[in-house]
Amino acid sequence: MTKQTYLHDKHVNLGAKMVDFAGWHMPVQYTSIIDEHKTVRENAGLFDVSHMGELFVTGKDSTEFLNGLVPQNIKKLDYEKAVYCQLTNKNGGLTDDLIIYKIGINNYLIICNASRVDEDLNWLENNTRGFDVNIDNVSHKYSLLAVQGPKACLILQKMGLDINQSSFTIKPAAIAGIKVLVSRTGYTGEDGFEILTENEHAEYLWDKILDDGKEFGIKPIGLGARDTLRLEAALHLYGNDLDKNTTPIEAGLSWSIPKDKTDDYVGKDVILNQIQNGTEKKLIGLKMADKSVARHEYEVYYNGEKVGVITSGAPSPMLNANIALAYVKNIKEICTGATVQVMIREKFHDALVVKRPFIEKRNSVKF
Amino acid sequence: MTITEKMLCTKSHEYLSENADGTYTVGLTDYAVEQLGDIVYLELPETNQEFTKGETFATVESVKAASEIYLPVSGKIVEVNEDVVNAPEKLNEDCYENGWLVKIVPTGDASEQDDLMTYTDYKEELD
Image (cartoon, rainbow over all chains, first blue to last red; front, side):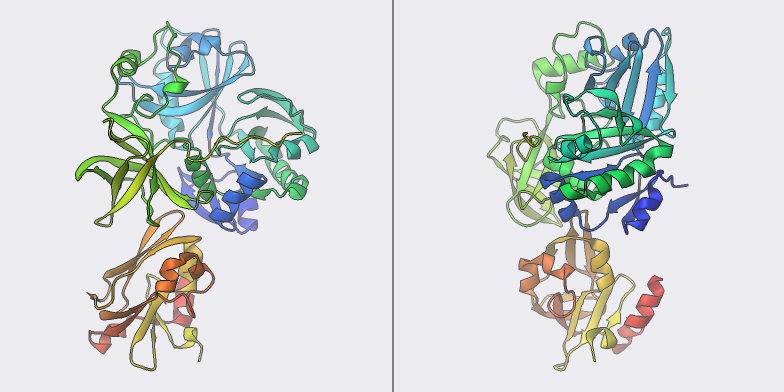
């Protein structure tokens, strides 16, 4: 049975094209993916991401417990701060990638991928032995709205939010009189906010944000543009670019892993070994030389030899070119500026290895 | 007669329309184009290539995915619409007048058209 968010009828009434995604009936686009994508880059977009999982982790050992399951240092996470994490397995591969928010002394909120909620819960629960910790899946109680884009802060300021909030922080706040949790995070490469609200307020907030944001050019944005936006920003998608056999080091996520964490965590030996001695595969960014599009699972060749596989690929509306992420053999010849070939329908198409992210890090409106 | 009045459609959303010179124009229906969303890439065959009924003769890429396009009847490609290859986004505006894909000369039996639908029937099938 496909699940629906509390905003499902809003999407249908807005004329969205609906698709099944991770067990949810979700809007893939309202008008056009390219138009929606540009709206987020130029103005602001509103996303219903209520399909994502929310877990509360509480109990006096919650810090210790989480600290042993991710390469990041949860002991150093301050109150109201957030950190991008990976749930690692004993081989250093990933059960999921997620954001952990510290919302109380021994109180954490985890926001994880919709497709991974059950696996994450299982994994967490299977590792609670000896810890005084409670894990509560509250996904069904909350709706999650994302307001993303250079004008996101102006819209939410108009709605009463104190926008003097740093990136990767979370705070209780009121938006249009509704009590919510607001974090300055997102999945678009833009400045923006994610708003966790009780389900009963979701429809009111959705309408109000679209209304109040009208003068700033806000539009509802579907999962199609969410995917092209995250790809331009070279943000990974679990199931495409990350899986249980891929380590954060291979995935180019070394920046997110503190080198000075003395505590043990699952998969630490593998990850440290890879930091020291390198990996067999690595993630690269590609820009197609022609108009063809490299898609998930297409093969990548270098000098006639198969060296890897595309994990995500799509047109980049901002670059007017087609871009992709691929895992390739970790050899020094395949570096920025090198040309590889992607096999598309039994023909080779040249692709240039380029830096990630594909677009410059973007900033909020200055005022 | 407008093109939608005389053309025949497949279940896989291609149309076939007879021209005065005996060739047939093949393209994607407005429903197909609408469902695909923003079209970004088209891979069309070369002239003189031959395909059998139902065979993949072209590929269309939308932002989301690549989709194969099947020939409604067996035929030889006699003309390829280069304009739409160069500007695939035009297909979203007009898939009939200027957004056709190829022209073919049928190489199979006339009975190959038996399972094709009129546009009216095709539209009904979609509902």
